[in-house]
Length: 322
Image 1 (tube, one colour):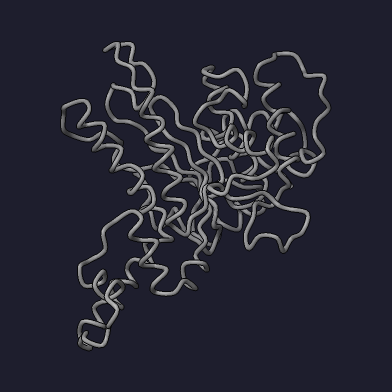
Image 2 (cartoon, one colour):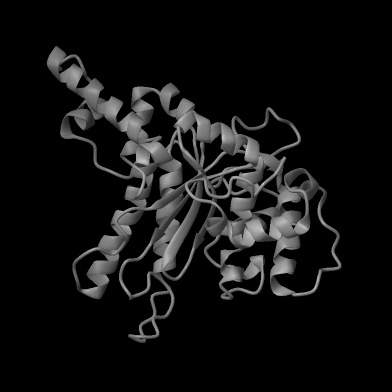
């Protein structure tokens, strides 16, 4: 039986989560459907555009993503502290990027004179803003706002009704830096693993292609969570690796994917801090979803999670050793 979402997502354990949504119908989300002969490639842009819009509205950072033919991968970072420190007006501005706020809230923040509002109206406005604020760091709301508009567009285009996505999105808690790195590489190289792309640079509608394109021009894409800069004070929040180290890790892993023989490229130095050997790393980045269940991490952090949640066992508890 699936675990309740509240038992799978706990910000006290980690702010990082890997989420996957899959189509429920035979018809593809994107790409060419071999059964009907129709091409749905344009829907990839729908998903990517919506995902990056949500990243600008929610207090949830997108670390990695890959839009595949019948499913979508995202690695998310929940920035709860940011949501709690936003002013009420900033919450209003963020929420109206994706939804029309209530008439009362709109009037309060758009009219020049707010003295005409009664105490009851002001209390209602404050309560509504509080609801919006909580939604801005809620992964379930993020995934709902990603999936529902795409489903409506696809159903309208297909001239049909009914579910487009599976009822629940799958989520995996990423407990430590090792699990986070392995999961991000797993997501970024998803098109290569599915043999629809020959390299990270040609993997359309992925975060790695967006990052590489920006890197060639000397910057990091503002729509994605940034990697660590030389100065730790440059960003308020950032991924715990340097971009150059991550790109080396991506290229090293990609070379192993396309060649049965060992690559002549030496393993990047960051790999030594993540896993004990190359074979373990390849297993993680090739079969991450199969290796782990609802939570991923090295054995120590997973054992701590198991004790805290009262579980009897966790899938993949010994996949990453200290």
